[in-house]
Image (cartoon, rainbow, N blue to C red; front, side):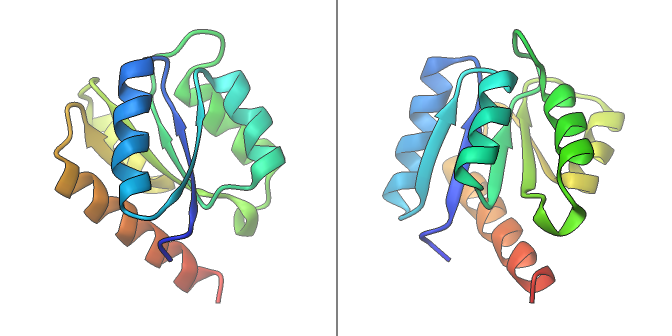
Length: 128
């Protein structure tokens, strides 16, 4: 499970770096994208098990990434998504739970790792 591939999508280099450090130190494979367009490209090239996705980004935002995933991938092939955003809204929370999970920035390292682990376990259970 720890070798699962995780795609971090955030326009903040600092946040990408922090998340990458946390997840790599926990044993995960990590790839990063600075916007939604790069995320879609990497999604097809790398087939990550999980996306950690910011909502407010240039070029293509988190909602656009989700729309692309829904349109382009069969349900069984879709990675889980953890929305990690500074936005607070009930609609976003519900959307997060529909695709995976919702976390509010800033997030504690222990909370991030707990949610990542639970989403990967859930995805594994659903694909077996």
